[in-house]
Amino acid sequence: MDKTSEKLTVYFEEPFWVGVFERISGGELSVCKVTFGAEPKDYEVRDFILRHYSRLRFSPTVEIKVKKTADNPKRRLRNAKKQMANSGIGTKSQQALKKQREEMKVERRKTGREQQEAERQRKFDLKQQKRKEKRRGH
Image 1 (tube, one colour):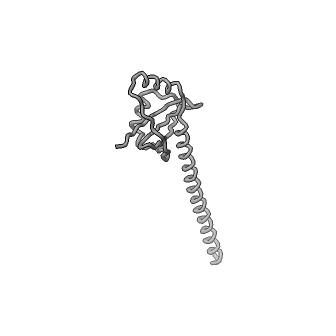
Image 2 (spheres, one colour):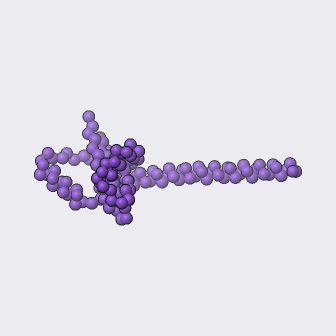
Image 3 (spheres, rainbow, N blue to C red):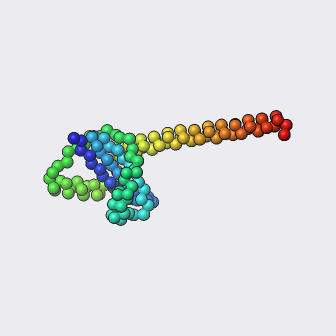
């Protein structure tokens, strides 16, 4: 049975507050970045998760090594303090976000090209129709 863990990191990235959802499942990491705008309150973050989590678009997965966490409560407290002091997100998460951005860029280019081609075809058809009407001698 695979263990799945999810983590939300909220930090200030000039000029907005940003939330990064990290999902680790079966040794693979996928990430989603959300811009909150003003500093979100705890209840606003909870409400956002409850309402919009299913619509989040996570990045393609990146292979990672999952470290076994210690059960020692002092070590857990130490790790929590370290995470609080460490602002931002990890490098693997940044790689996943970069991969997602690149895929979205390719998708945008593809749809843009299709729209451009459709517009050219429409103009060509319109021009052909006008030429036919001129030949009729109206």
